[in-house]
Image (cartoon, rainbow, N blue to C red; front, top):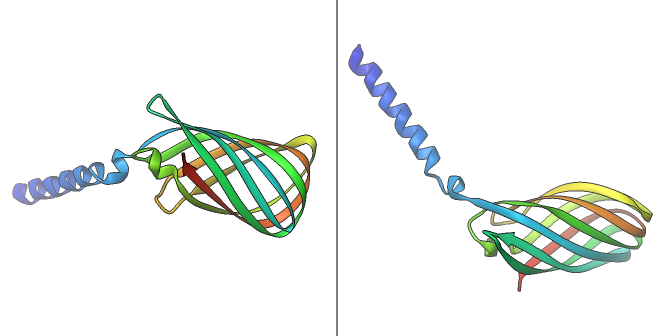
Amino acid sequence: MHVSRLRAALVALCAVAGVAATPTALADGGTISFRVVKAGFVIGGSAGSGTLNFHGRPYHISIGGLSYGFTFGGSVINFHGTVSNIRGPSDVAGVYAAGGLGAAAGSRGAGAIVLTNQKGAVLSLTGREAGLIVAADLNGLAITID
């Protein structure tokens, strides 16, 4: 009876140790901020740049993207937030996809979004939008580390 309890406790301990040693447990994070200019009529485009801060070092990033759907107008969006589940700055580089619905007139637009790329990097962002735009579209955003 005692041997089976001891064996069960050892199995549970090994399982917990295995989960703690997975690559996700070794992942790190940082902060990110960037500015994106978006414009379109049905098909839209976006471009921008910003900074990823990881372990106290700044890394310049470039943003490019396309959208398709109901898009009319133009805007500038300033995003700020956190990056998680990365092992290094290069993990932020990649393609992020999202669907969106929104509008901005003047400088009153604001929102929040969480995006994930193919490497598992997670961007948790808030932003302020200024311009004149109405959009209900699918977006693809590519981030590169310069």
